[in-house]
Amino acid sequence: MASTRPILRPRYRIFRLPGRGVVRFVFRRPPILFALALIGAAPPPSTAISTLSPDSETRWVSFDLTPGNQIRFTMAVNGMPATAILDTGVSASVISRDFASVHRLHVQPRGHASAIGGNVAIGWAATQSIALGGLTRRGGGMIVTTLPAAATGTARAVDILIGHDLIDAYALEIDFEAKRFRLIKSGRLPFRGLSAPLSIAANQNVYVTEALLGGRRLAPMVVDTGDGSSITLSQESFRAARITGLPTTTTIAYGLAGALITDLAIVPSLAVGKLTASDVEIRVERRGGFSHEIGAAGRIGSGFLQQYRVLLDPIAGHIVFGPSSQTGKPPVRSTSGILVATEAARLRVLHVMRGSPAEVSGWRAGDLICAIDGTPVPADYSNSPISSWSVGSPGRVVLLSGCDGRERALTLGRFY
Image (tube, rainbow, N blue to C red; front, top):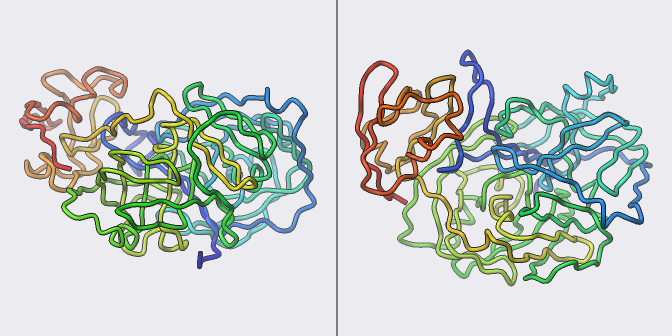
């Protein structure tokens, strides 16, 4: 990789838009990307000492998935509970500025790092202790930056991003079905599966592997558990694969540094090492995007990983994919082309996907929806049955009532 900047990335579902209050992003349909990537943030030399307890194999850490598909759990920093994201796409673990302020950590300025959406200012703060599952670290410190709630899709921002510097001396097993992970000794193989090469990129200090698309080797591919999407490619990598006749559309992505538009498609197959997956959703960054900037071909996110039981062991040199009940399930496709956020009793259109029924019908970002097929938008819209309309069966006609009283019929259809 050419760049030596740090990497940060985030995803989110609930966040605050300027002047608009709290909004909730609705996901179980078309994909809005939330990623917490940060590259180029390297902590100063440290005398920190990390130990793994003898019973580490029994020290599972329970987690839930944020609306942005990120692994969220509770750990301890200096004996204080902290909400964290497991993020192998950050080059160094991160503490939020809010957490550092509340707990009076002294923050030293350290310049800037590269994040999805742009660059962010970073600092560094010493820590006394960090406890995570069977892992304990004494001394050392962590990078400090602002961690917006928008990056995870939640109303409250997380406190910590756990990156490779804390965990890469061990094997990391993630059991997505049971929603738990653990750190164990490198070299252990607790389940059988298909493997792919895995290492730590020397310049970027993140987990990397390689993929095969259209017969073209794509490397390095950052393995990024902090990225809620499936596969993201740089524009150069996607073009090199020469996949012809593939319908594409657009979607919106949110990172630590803000929002951006990416292209979106579903490819017939993609291989990662010995694993070949079918009908894989990929996002293609615009020219000069984050992957290009950090010298990567792209990223493999948790949207892809969560279809399997996963073991990440860079010292042993492999990532292992075990089968699960989610393996082989096709991605959810939008049939409307409308990506929305909820605001109280209404929906705000965040993005209209290119070539979609919504675009053809004249929908625009910023449009407001107050009722669907005559049913007012409920407070718990994202968990209500009516929220599935945007990925409904092609040919279905949905009546959308604008908050200005205007009613518009939208015929759903497959467009990518």
